[in-house]
Length: 453
Ligand SMILES: *[C@@H]1O[C@H](CO)[C@@H](O)[C@H](O)[C@H]1NC(C)=O
Ligand SMILES: *[C@@H]1O[C@H](CO)[C@@H](O)[C@H](O)[C@H]1NC(C)=O
Ligand SMILES: *[C@@H]1O[C@H](CO)[C@@H](O)[C@H](O)[C@H]1NC(C)=O
Ligand SMILES: *[C@@H]1O[C@H](CO)[C@@H](O)[C@H](O)[C@H]1NC(C)=O
Ligand SMILES: *[C@@H]1O[C@H](CO)[C@@H](O)[C@H](O)[C@H]1NC(C)=O
Ligand SMILES: *[C@@H]1O[C@H](CO)[C@@H](O)[C@H](O)[C@H]1NC(C)=O
Image (cartoon, rainbow, N blue to C red; front, side, top):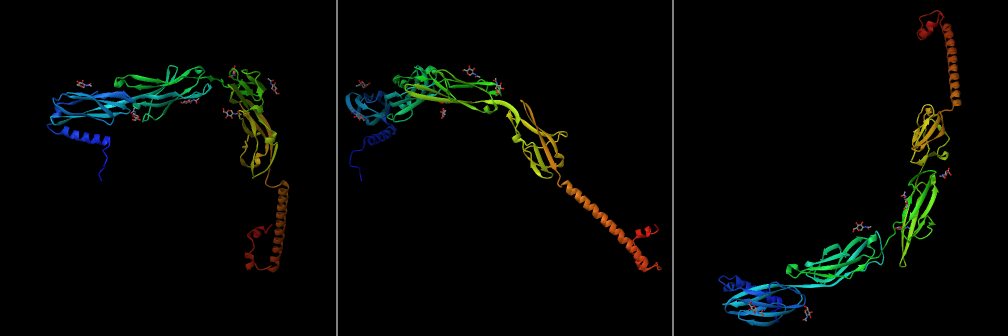
């Protein structure tokens, strides 16, 4: 099927262009001697604008000078060797072609039209009603429109100071874009004017640099100065007086561990005689400020270290231990203090050390009195521990066993002596004459040796 309607404009242009290119490239083409000129060359014009394009040639007898374009065109005059056309409502970049014939040869030339447009909107997003000092403030500049985007930049400003300059990415130009910059708000920013502007740089096209500026916004800041919470001494020796102070800026109410300041803007303070239980104690201060009916709160905490000790509690270190020999036992003893003390238990005279907190195999020599000493840079503390190590068997049992053994031995000896005496008498009775009886050989040698006694 062949399309019945006329070819679309771009298709037509393309066909014509290809046709013309073929003709131009054919050898001996006379058109090349008399080029066709397009005036103006590569013009830049505001979006929606109009311009006159003049196609002219030196060819003595040119024919059919035309302008090929998808834009709205209207002939506005012609003369020998030229034809002019008015283009209107030019809203986007485009390419126009002049074509004609010279002595039967095709002439062709083109020009690129660049359209520029200023942004429709350059707006700095509203600032917060009150900005806390020391917090980041994000500035947002919203830009709609603007072309060509490759030549458009957004600048964010504090007064005259440039905070950020960035290219506007994104085509088409209708897309709304946002440029941001972050500033750390300081006290001096109170009352500062923030704004943004766009820069459309058409200097390469000989037109200049065009700025569109947003309405400025004034920043109002408020500061807390903290709250500042400090200790007169962060590591205080036990028994010394520590002062805790919390303060914030003017008009700020502070509350330190439940103690309120006398008036807004005044510091809150408390004092204490540092004791062991105050070690690692935290102090909490909260500050509150009301600005334009809005309440801002901040808080801080600080920890106190108290230097004390060393100390050993009886509850944590027994006075007397009764251990059995050859059993496994653990010597439990704890010392406390800041800085953490070292603890050793040494036998009074021998200086034998029994390890603390780990299982030990009890030996008899452990029996004795021990000095358990905790030491740190703040001094030493000693506690006496008596260790009573009992042997495996009770002394009574040992004595009883010894008596039994002795009695047993005596009994056996007596019995043996008696038996021997009986035996000797029995031999004489059986065979008094003969000395060659086999029985004699069985007599113990000792007995023979003993005989004369
Ligand atoms: C077109 O260009 C020719 C040659 O330069 C000139 O003579 C003629 O006046 C121009 N026409 C217009 C309308 O500018
Ligand atoms: C100009 O062109 C735009 C689209 O390209 C169209 O919407 C608008 O109506 C045109 N304006 C005139 C006056 O022809
Ligand atoms: C502020 O933002 C910058 C980066 O933009 C960051 O490095 C900085 O830590 C931020 N400061 C605060 C107080 O949030
Ligand atoms: C604690 O703060 C007060 C008031 O700002 C100041 O005078 C004092 O020197 C500070 N003390 C310490 C130890 O920082
Ligand atoms: C702190 O308290 C201890 C014990 O109650 C006391 O001996 C010491 O004198 C006190 N220190 C001061 C500076 O009052
Ligand atoms: C203290 O401030 C932090 C953040 O600033 C907040 O998360 C916390 O809840 C506050 N604590 C109290 C007890 O107000």
